[in-house]
Amino acid sequence: MKKKSIKRQEFVLRTIGIVHSPFKEPTDIPRDMNRLPGAFAKVRGDLEIFPECAEGLKDVGAFSHLIVTFAFHKSTEAKLLSKPPGETRLRGVFSTRSPHRPNALGLTVVKLASQRGNTLRVSGIDMVEGTPILDIKPYTARDRKSGIRTRQKDGGGPAGRLFNKLDSPIKIQRFLDHLDYDCLPGTRSPLWVVREGKANCFEGALFAAAALRAIGHKPLLVDLMATNDDDHVIAVFKRRGHWGAVAKSNFSVLRFREPVYRTVRELVMSYFDIFFSTRDRKSLRSYSPPFSLARFDRRNWVFTDGDLGYIGDALNATRHIRMITPAMVRELVLTDWALHRSVYLGAKKAGIYKAK
Image (cartoon, rainbow, N blue to C red; front, side):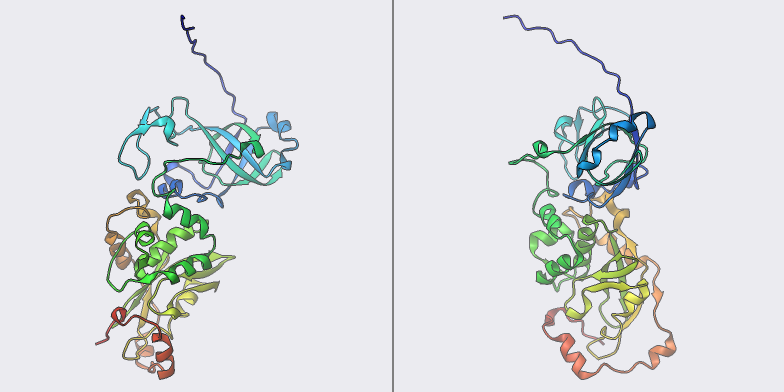
C-alpha cells in the first residue's frame, strides 16, 4: 500500500499580549528553579492582553488556573539535541524543556490571582519580561492527569520531592532539627544532606537557603563571626518586612528565629547573649550582610556532588559588620552557669569548640 505524502504546512501566529515578569533576561532565572517542583509557584507577574483581544477575557475569572502558550522570543537557534541542566548526556529536544526548539513555542500553567481590565495578575511565572503571548485557555479537570512518569534527575527525585513538602520556614527548621549533627568540617550540597541525613552548620544553612528559595524567598546567608569560638551561618528570610532565620546548630538556641526583627542587625543581636565559648565568654563579634547564593547558580550548588568550599571562601571574604566596640568587649560579663548548662544540654561533645 502506497503511503500518502505528508505536506508540510506553515502558519502565521498573532501575538495577543505580552508578559510582565520579575525576570528581565533568561539568565535571571536560577537554573536550580527549573529542577525544583513548585519553585515558581510564588513568582508573580502580569499578562497584559492587547486591547483588540481584550473581549476574549470575558468569564476568564471563573477559572483558578490558565494555560498560556507563548513564544521563546529570546531563543536564537533551534537544536534537536539538548543537554538539560545538571545532566551530562544530550537528549532529544522533544524530551526536554529547552527553549531552543524548531518552532520556539512554550506552554505553562499559571494561577490567576486577579483581573484588572485587560491585565491578568498571575503567579507561577516562569517567563521573562516581554514574552509574546500567543494563546490563553482555562486549565480544567480534563487537563489533570494521573500516573505521570518523568525522568527528571535529582530535582524530581528525593531532594525535589522533599523541597516540595517543606512549604514553610518552620517545616524547613524541623527537618534540619531531625538531621544528625555532623561534627566534621565540610561543605557539601543540599542534595548530599538529603542523601546522607546529616549536616553541619554551614551545610544546614545551604540546605535551608535552597528550601527557602523553593517557597519564594531569596537564597540568603548571614555569617556570624566569633572570636576564640566556632563561627555560625544562618539562612535568613523576610516576611512582611521583618527578618527571620533557619539554621542547623549543635546548640538548640542558635537555630530558628521568627520573622519579627526589623533589621538584620536586630536579628543577629538575638544570638549575642547565648553565643559564648566553653570559657563562658560571649564570643560573637561581627556579621555579614545578607549574602546571596544566586551568584553560584551556574555551578549547580544545590544538586552537585562536588565540594562547595568556594562558597565558604566567598562568604568569609565578604565584608563583615562589627557588632560591639572594644570598650564594650572589655566590659562583657561571663555567662551565668545555669545558662551555660542549659545551652550545652544535648550538644555533641565532639562538635564543641574548645576555647583557648
